[in-house]
Length: 244
Image (cartoon, rainbow, N blue to C red; front, side):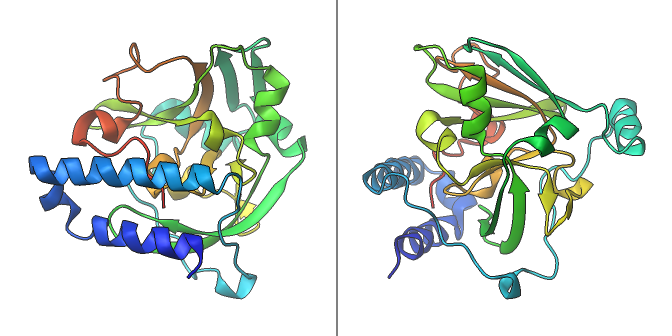
């Protein structure tokens, strides 16, 4: 059995009925143990790539989930203008803060990959994603020595709170971690996070932040929202490391 198959099987087992399991103290302990095991296993395998598929395997429809749009006049104006003035800011513990337009992002070296998206709710879909590697952007900005995590700022809100997510530097510099602007050869649809979203292929879907506006290098999460490193982690005890 391939590594991803082994890890995905364990994740699927844990995801099935996760809402009931996670409500109990033993259940939360189980999820925390599984999270540590996933992270340790993936560190053992280093930069090994997750499975990439053929075009024939692409799902006929890639559903949106969680936020499927941004309900603000500013976002509507960006959408009407083809996101020509959208900006992605790179800030925090970097030597050189950067600001990218969508056109700037498209002119960076690109990676195209066909991968499977696994949602914590139990569904999956295969899509072709294109965008620059996050490593390219971070190398351009230059990380300060104290930087330990990368936080992703988003334009969408859920229940009145701004969505955000984070990963560590191992996943940030993984070859398949990209800032995607295209799905299946077309500009990213709004339901899938237009104009930019994270693809961090070794983790479950809620880590793949959509509607990206900012990338911030930080030393800790202590002063960010609920302090657990992500929207769902703050509210529902989702695991910060959602490895598959």
